[in-house]
Image (cartoon, helix red, strand yellow):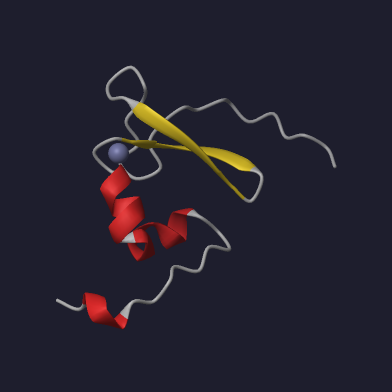
Length: 68
Ligand SMILES: [Zn+2]
């Protein structure tokens, strides 16, 4: 597989802020390195369905006990 020459954009998956602005946490999904900032991290944990469209292939766990 040819490596695409994508720029190493270190920015939050959700809010797109860079590590120059906010502390970023690194994680991996689908062999890809992703970053999420500390402000958005709880979204990944508790509301991961909101980020599913940012992570192709990710199926968030459905939690019926978590209704509004
Ligand atoms: Zn963020």
